[in-house]
Length: 193
Image: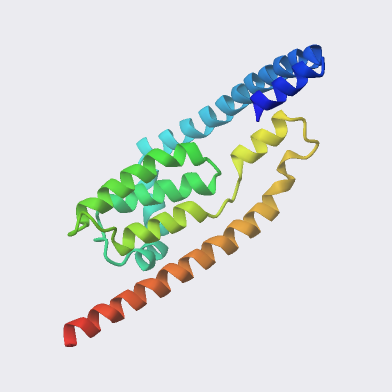
């Protein structure tokens, strides 16, 4: 698309506009990256403080009633629950990139509980659903992006984002639970047959 645009501009004698557009886009990209670096550094620093201060255990305990229902097959004190709690927390704060390492760690720890290493467990599927749809209390990345592009109200996205992500998460969890129950029922029928 970019190449086609450049070729089209060259054939139409718009070299000056192409040059100005490339330079303006480059400057805008660097400004956006610097804005993101600041926001991510802030939240990653806060998350590291939360992790090292032991607040993650408190956070895990607070989220445990929800996590227990979503991941009944994960033992109570398994480290996967802490990683899942961290991942959910980072996602709720809109820190998609900060949530990724916690998500990978959680998935690795869930894989350790997996008896059949070739097939994802129900817990892994549920984690993927909640992680992907994740409720966004503070869509930090979108706010930073809107602020870097000069939005007058970069935080006006919070309510609509919260509503949309809550609905998507609820629907995702309902579908995952329904599929889990069907799978369990099928396994029970096979066992009785």
